[in-house]
Length: 195
Image (cartoon, rainbow, N blue to C red):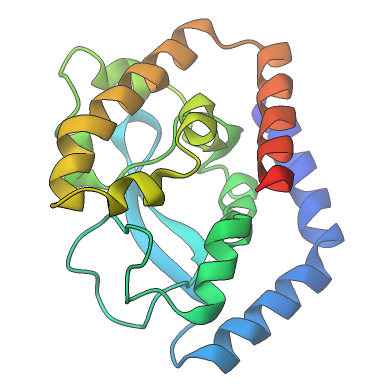
């Protein structure tokens, strides 16, 4: 998709969803102390770092690890609902409008996980803007439940899930089309509605 299309659609969505943003922001503040948004450094286009926007779903402490399994005690009551419904991802529309992200593209990872990507695939994946959704987001929509079954969730993510997701990221970049992106948006909406 073109950046102009992404920015226009995201701008319209931000205006249309303003009441939802307000309601979620209020719920986050009432539920636990701390900021409304969670900001974290991720790796974007051409390997440039940026700070992603999400609604905060955890207690206001620096995370010890960068993955969260189902049942993670750090997740707040409102946070559990936001994660299940994917409403915590909505603020990334701000990142699309600012040009740091796209609607569809490989999900942006933290620097330490990008360093785990195969050297030959890193420039392929980072040749496009990271996105709010992509094939890996749909395939691993219930990733937290899978991580909950692991003895070491972070190690399981690095050893098992991350390599699978990296292959999906690279495959998406090599074969992406405008029509394909529209289909992915539709599949994402359906996946969210079905829960």
